[in-house]
Length: 303
Image (cartoon, rainbow, N blue to C red; front, top):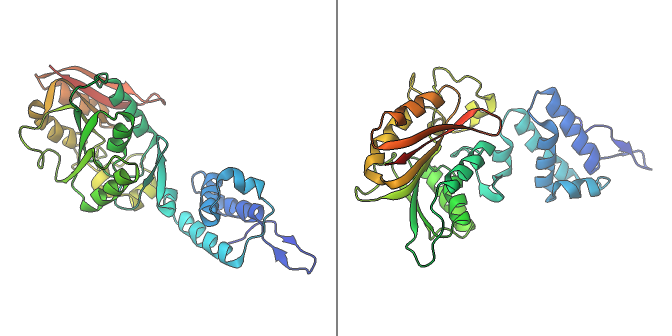
């Protein structure tokens, strides 16, 4: 991999600085059609050097050692092969929270940050000396949604469910790291299966799989290759399959006046809304757009 525009020192040797390595990495990633090549190069070089973006540019003329260049070369090669930046970093920011991520979990998306906003807006206002409110996150993955809710609403007690034991291990670490491990109970199972019959929640939130594996339209190649299929794909030919499974438990587990809020996407949004609209115990069924204007959040209230 070329490191780009090297400068010669007084002895005639090539000197690789932060800036020349950064520019060379960006150029190499651009040639391979990697999304956001400059940002990828900045994040990966920041990992190698333990620097944030500002410091990289403040120390742009700092020489890099052979070991540092070798570490950067390895990361950039993996990024050029399509591996997500978040996996290479081992963490990703979600609503200002640094979360551990990896192949066992979806990388948290900006749209899911918006989902947390939608959910928070529908929670009852905090009340002094009242019992904690109970919420559940179905298909928690990295724990991003549950942890963000717990951090922003200290009066919440949450249950977070996932079918993947590996995902739950990541989520537990994240909850502990952000000081909410005592208010988020992580349980293993499929949707409502591990939840006691008498459990009631004022909020049910989920970002379930909704991509039809037979028609993965618009799904980025790196997502298809590196992120967990269990968290991406619905039943074949049925993008609303997970919404139906979740809806089947809402009459038992969603408290009167409580809200179900879920993320959805292209090819599944209207189908998910229709699943909720068909439940006679639900009202206020709505499909809301994300900031880009795409139908993204489906919600309903228990009568």
